[in-house]
Every structure is written in C-alpha cells, then in structure tokens.
Length: 170
Image 1 (cartoon, one colour):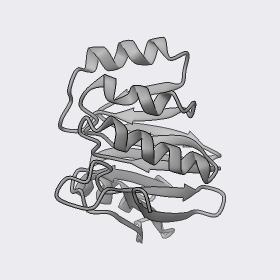
Image 2 (cartoon, one colour):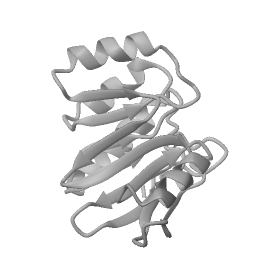
Image 3 (cartoon, rainbow, N blue to C red):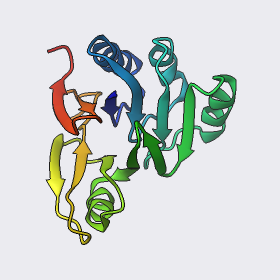
C-alpha cells in the first residue's frame, strides 16, 4: 500500500490537493496529515479526490468543531484523530504526531514501524535506532504549503517500507 504523507498545509488548500493528486497518480491509497491544517475548508479539495485521510491538528488547531463535523459528514473518509494518532495501515503500526522532537522520541520506543511528524517544515525520512533493536522509520514530509522552505510531501510504500520526499509539482 502506498500512502501520501503531508504536514503543515496552513490553509493552503490548493497545495494540499495538489500533493494528494500527485500521490494518487502514483498509486497512493490513503493520506496522513501530520497537523497544522488550520481550517476545515482546506480539506475539501483534497477529500474530493476520494482517498481516506487521517488528520491530527498540530499546534495551529484552527476550528476542531468544524473538523469533527466534517469528519462525521465524510462517511468515514476523514478520520480526525485530535492531538495524535495511533493507526494501522496495511498491517503496519503507525504513530502520527506533530512535533518532530516528539516524533523522534516515539520512534526510539520501537513500538511503531513508522512515525510521521511535522512542525519543523524541514523534510526528512530516516531510520532511527530504537530501544527494542529494530529501527523505526521517522518521516517528516516538511511543509506542503512551502512556508520558509520548499513545498514538500512524502510518498510511502508500506509493503517495501520505502519513503521518498517529493517537491510539490516536480
């Protein structure tokens, strides 16, 4: 299963939808958003592309009531998890947090196969040593909005456990 990983869209609906569109064209079947979406309306163009979307809110919460309402009305397509998420996709244990230092700490526990984070606007995908011996993937897709950094997102292949950072539109 391929997934689109995004973060820090900061009300840039067009950029978010473009990343999801690009990922879907490459076979992505789900989206993980690592926070700082801000407004619920930002999701509508991305949701129109039909992929299930897992979302946490980050430190720029926006309107959580509107996000809950949109989630309830989405017939399961939008899963709004709140401050963080612990999900399973394609049999992989995934933790989604906003802060990159928290993401690193969660990766070090060895409880997850993949930890997705954001906040820093600095894209990276790397393996982190864990206390349980097996490394954990830590993926920060950067900022899809391109704020003080290039507009980036990540394409993940959960079967192969490969993660590629992509620049929006490239």
